[in-house]
Image 1 (cartoon, rainbow over the protein chains, first blue to last red):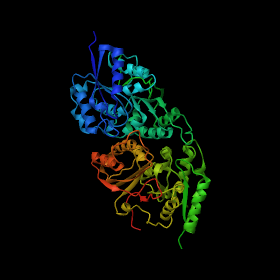
Image 2 (cartoon, one colour):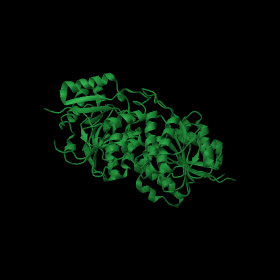
Image 3 (spheres, chains in turn blue, red):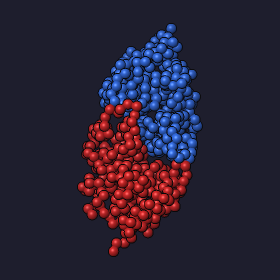
Image 4 (spheres, helix red, strand yellow):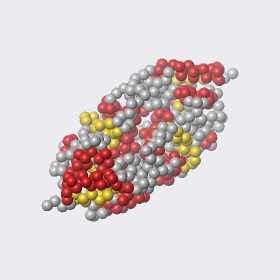
Length: 280
Length: 280
């Protein structure tokens, strides 16, 4: 008999609705029964302007579930924007339970995953989150995440992330803003998978300037491009494809371009555990 | 009798039209007569996807006018996007004439002004550019720039920039992408004036995270906020004003917030010479 995995959900950026929480819990119950139990922290439903509660409230909720010995994994309910505003002081308060825990999310959550990875706290994982349930095929995305979080099924892991090479996955805009800050992890030797949504190609190009300007990126093993979705039409065509522009910046920085990754802001978004993934 | 000042125009990002060049030359002739002569480089009118010619062409045009002893000042015809794509190798090719020259522009041009300032090449100036002629009141903006470029009139200079303190001015999105890269100048001791256009407040907030994460910003004398114009409505209000969010990030980084600056993507945009401005 499998022991129940307790998964706490908090929102370091924007809030979710009670309705989404209920639907997510229904998927978990229908597909995984007793193998998983979801605990939606009240902070998920708080509102403070753009954010799911003020910085102090989001920081406190994250710290609470991270330090809780009864919680096996922290799942971020939503991205949006706001994880980079969490209190600097919270990271020193994370205890031994926080250090042994899994943190799972993507997009804006990447700010927090990055900071934890830099500080070697916990197991950091890029993958689908409850708000993905709003996408077409979103239930499969959620099931993929829960399947990894609950019985530790590795079927949903991005193929390259199972090759024994250290990997990370980030949203391009998020990584561009992390670059050069003290939230940026050392990506030496890593395969860096990138994806984005809703950005003009010129903005993605500019973000790649910033990412490739970060010193640790120059010693990355290489870059893989996930999907850039919902790219808006500009007043004139950019003149090269998304893959061409990523190759361009890789060439400028002397970093290998390693091909496409199976990640993106969509229901097919695969799981990328940060670092080296042990065989299941 | 004043000697004619020769001003070369190139476009490190997007192109301009022949019509705009003609209108700009008319303003110069009508207002400044023989005091100024504008030389629009053919590269201004080139097209390569998003850009005014390919990177090599934009780099070559800039290098040509920068190194030309007959050119007194280089004026950027347009911002847009692309200055950060200029060849890395061009900076080592700038000669003694390039080092004595004025470079004048703003917005995306800030990438290039930053790189030159970092390398202590030339006199770098934030101020209006030919495309501002398309704005309401744009002729006054252009005249302000030419008045500074031609007889060296300091009437259009931002008031704080005349106080003897080292200043710089940047677009927030541009500076966020410069932060942490080897194009970022050392802003220790500087008053840093910031402005932006067309960005969601959450995106500006995220950009401030990146800017304040740059180490040299922590020893800046302080930050002044220019105008954030054309801020799009988000699906929910951000919850604080533009000035509140800049103050927030200043407080987090322990950098003084020094009030409003008279700069922005508008016809009132004042001139900010980088560094210490000598009294006229």
